[in-house]
Image (cartoon, rainbow, N blue to C red):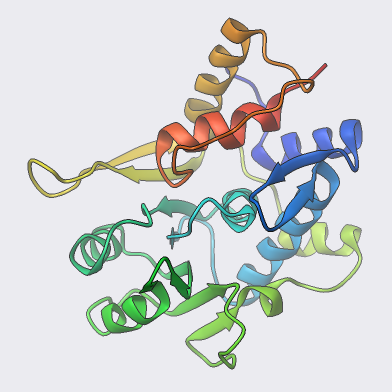
Length: 242
């Protein structure tokens, strides 16, 4: 199950193999394999232009939207570390994770199911000295500022080949990829460190046991900001082949 292929390498390979076939659909937006690979690259370069560097942690609190899937690959492309936060968490839990992980940026949404996530992050920013800026996914009523940028404006323009060069060297699958936090029900949450290989290997084992292929259609109810959802609803279909 251990390979030398990076997340971005996997995305490029699947884009070449499946092209415009649907990869992920969230009820509102759809991405083909080709769109996913390209959008992840554009976001990676946008984040790099904003100063996100290799090894920095970036918190992502989003519902099960295509933007989370793209963000996971974009961060891996430039060597930043994904810190997913369950969308049900509020100020105390989110503030602790931001501080403990030392997140330099956060990607979130505006109001979702009656709660304004962006407003919460803005309130928490004063106590999170590492946090330099916020990214708003599907936030259309906010102007870009020094400490806020909309998702759409963060996607870098340009030719794919030029953006690949600007993104810099790809990461190795044994480099830092993810810090996923426990729920904190018995004490403060603990962060569990993963490389891309440690997460991808779980998806590979599941695919083998289920004889999972690109012909399968999957419904993923688990939050993809949780390790279960990330493995089964993102990486499992991402690596599927005929």
